[in-house]
Figure 1: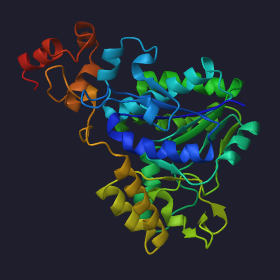
Figure 2: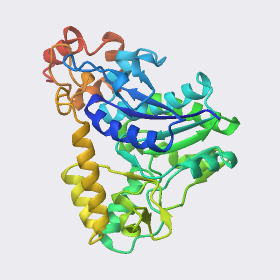
Figure 3: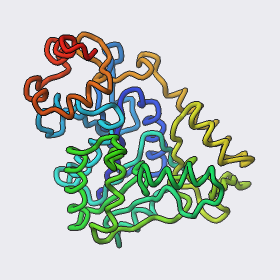
Length: 342
């Protein structure tokens, strides 16, 4: 059986992707692991896949996306890294002939084999994990978690998996098209990158399975109903009976710490997991990669690209036609200067 798994990142997230790759390799050395990069490495960083836990690298420029520079410019860093997920799944199915494809966010770590998910794909074609598996009761948790799901999507697309069958291919084609055309953080239009689209999946496609085992995709948004324990033999358990399969260490830093404290409470084992993860990320960090680096975050003259400039370009077909490569500062940037938009 050919199983392919990929993550999507820029080089500022390489440290996290290294932790994910290492934990995946520990349990699934037979899987083909893809590092999908919406970036170009810094000049001072000689990126070498031979030193990475991933088997293959796929750059955004390897994808057959029409008007690549224009398409990339229309997205900020989060939008771009999520927009490629649909096209990559479609590519792995169509070109690599993968029988099963898994996606995991780079800020996830795997703690036990994912074989139960592989088995689920024998019966189902699409796997999704909800942000929550139980109703909240307190006002703060309702606002943070349930209302957060209403705003950002019922299912967390830090994970998804599909089987290469008719239903899986149908989903992959649809999701790829939506990601290419409408992967924007525009909540006023009902959009939140790739994630909100998948609210429609159980209604639009057959053989969809909602994974309700609490050992998958543990994160701050569901800690109010998930307790972590570590047994005497070192096994990490969720709600006593479920092995922790993977933990989603979202928002590494002050925001992640605040939300974890809010919902982990006195569950000390959660903080031990975070301490372990922070050490792993620090060890995997290369000082030659500037903090927050993204090649596509700047014009050719080195000036930062403001989000409002991307949105303006996204909304106006005339600008897209006039400046097919808006990263070139001699074109769109000069127009913005002339229009006093900078």
